[in-house]
Length: 127
Image (cartoon, rainbow, N blue to C red):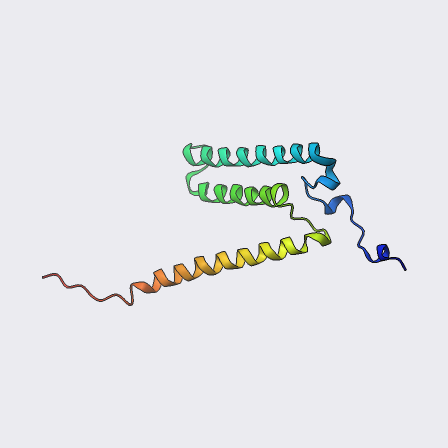
């Protein structure tokens, strides 16, 4: 049994846009980063356009911006961070999950502190 027999087989679907080895070298990487940049700019401009016009029904604007923000995160994960389903991407996914956990802890803790801050404040009397 050779060492190569234990290595997982990587398909074309396990590579992210921008992976130089899988996408044709530096030219392919530049092309895929340019596509990611164009998509990110398009999603950003669309968000500002929706927020500044009456194109979307007013109560649904936060939903539309949230959907565009999630799409923006997907573009960044795939085109710039190269998060894939491949076995070599496990460390990237774990680092991303840890970062998301830390962000949620900081935001949740801050919101909890602000929500309970009013209960701990001294009552101010007007004289």
